[in-house]
Each structure stands twice: as C-alpha cells, then as structure tokens.
Image (cartoon, rainbow, N blue to C red):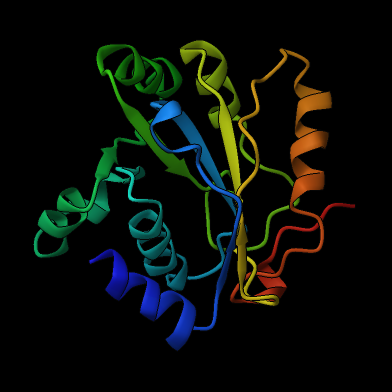
Amino acid sequence: MKRFSSFIYHKILGWKLIGDFKGDTIKKCLIVVVPHTSWHDFYIGLLIRQLANLKISFLGKKELFRWPQGWYLKKVGGIPLDRTPGQNKVEAIAELFKKRDELRVAIAPEGTRKKVKEWKTGFYHIAKAAQVPIIMVTFDFGKKQNVISEPFYVTGDIEKDMKFMYNFFKGVKGKVPKYSFNVD
C-alpha cells in the first residue's frame, strides 16, 4: 500500500514531502495542518500517513461520523468530537493522550475550511495539558509540497508560540487560495 500511495502522491499528483515525523520516536503528538481550505486536504493527509507508515488519527465534528461515511472515517483513524457548548473539550482530548500509549492526532487549527484571521487555540491548550509536542505540516497546493516541522513543545507563552507557528506557514497556499491562512 505504501508503494501505491507513493506512486499516487509523487507521480500522479506531483507532490513532494519534505521532512519526516521521526518514525516511532514520537509516539504522542498533535499534528497541526495548515491551511485547511478544501476536502482535498483529506486524501492528501491519508497519503502522507501511508508514506510515513504511521498511525495518525484526526478529529472531526461528530456529525461527520453518521452513516454512511461514519464507518469509513472511524476505520481510517477518525475520532468524533462533540462540539456541544459547555464541555471541556481540551481536557477530554488531553485525557485521550494520557490513556493511550500511542496517539498522533492531526488537527486543523483554523476550525473551518473558510478564511480566518487567527486560529482557534484549543490545540495549543491540548498540547500543553497533555504535554505532547506539536508537529506542523504545510498543505501547500501552490508548491505541491508538504513540509513537516521538527517537534515543537509549547512554552506557555501563547503569544510567542503562536507567532512562531504562524511564521512556519507563511506564504503557504491552500487548494482554495482565497481561504488560505495568511500571516499579517
């Protein structure tokens, strides 16, 4: 399957993967993918996961996990998230990391495929509470490349850390460029 995924990713789609997830050395992490502008991000993410040969889960609103696609999303690592107000989602997700020996979760901090001026910060607080690193991955449709960062541990200085992460994604164009996250 890895060979087939590589053929599709590199030869048919013409994408390039720069960096890696450090294999089995990083058993728990949050993988921040930006920009998230289209449903095309999903299959690119699945291909990256195959190339990396790692189990990587993803969070999705629970409504996506209804029949008929729900069984498939769970099979490929989807974790349904109840977004009902009044719940402590950060603690619930941090608890998942504490309960499992291995958990890598991809998340789009924009929280939508539409244009945003800043990210939702839940992922930051999850990484801090669970004491797991963040690995950033670009979804650059302009250059047809995914760049994987070194693991980054939040410092507790959210303003400084967000600036650092925003800069990593500077100039990256999503499938729908007008919805791409831009650093001002």
